[in-house]
Image (cartoon, rainbow, N blue to C red; front, side):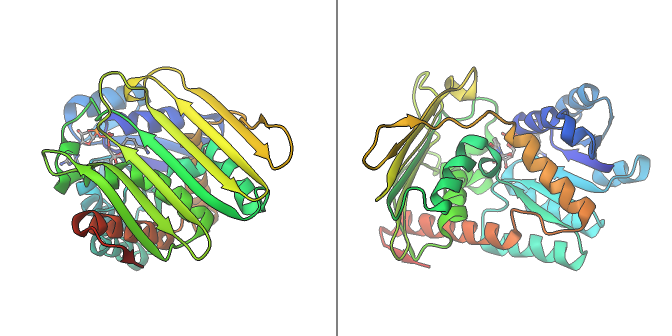
Length: 331
Ligand SMILES: NC(=O)c1ccc[n+]([C@@H]2O[C@H](COP(=O)([O-])OP(=O)(O)OC[C@H]3O[C@@H](n4cnc5c(N)ncnc54)[C@H](O)[C@@H]3O)[C@@H](O)[C@H]2O)c1
């Protein structure tokens, strides 16, 4: 049983607490400490049924743990990853891992030096609707891909303010474009070049961005927004077209990801009628945590490899550069 210290007790920590209730996760891992700020931290610990501590060191002394699950604001990921790695703890960390490749390298170096696992929580790679699309593209079912386009559109998170500071969150580009860029990377690999257009918020965050990616023979556009107005439904879309078929996937939930998701997913094979393409539901958060715990137990490489997360961060940094300069950035 892998003993986990949960660092942070905000929005995503709550999703991870739920995921640890999943039967398959429960069998191999357990949150034994919530570490962070007393108010929300104590409430989260009460919900888990574990103890609360203000520091990782106290949690280690009092209850001991094997791995840390980092769910704090992005600008703190480096500090807690390096600290946990130097304590000899495996690290599962929310996306984006860091706001620069240099910061990522310091995190990964600490994990390598201490021989601990390091995995980014890229949940789309474990959500069945998205994995199913990725799998059929990889399998060649759609033939040669002409265009891959995805969207992730949301209001600004209502639950916290640190995302408004580009130094702390990187804005929507780093915060949510990372999901779709990571998924596209997991299918097509490292692109040759990046070009982006977008809108910068008054606080200096690139919060509505379309990042275009160019490979040898595939092109993609990944659009994201953290600035949709009113009660615009949280929207995720993928439209992908190849010479043998197309997929049209759209998911809409309530504003700020509240409420039920309404999903339409159709596959349109070339030359025949469209068919339902909805994947069976799963809990992506539980699955990403399960595979990380399995990598710790079996001493295998976590399936979201740090080198891949480094490439994805390089793409995002290139998109940022493109937004600032108006130039195509070669990778
Ligand atoms: N995978 C996803 O779909 C998803 C969704 C939302 C957020 N995230 C990521 O999760 C991370 C946390 O986001 P959130 O929305 O849960 O944030 P949040 O503001 O809801 O929660 C942050 C938590 O960290 C604590 N905290 C705040 N400032 C801190 C500091 N300086 N040092 C240590 N702890 C601090 C807060 O007390 C709180 O417990 C971010 O990196 C974000 O990008 C991922």
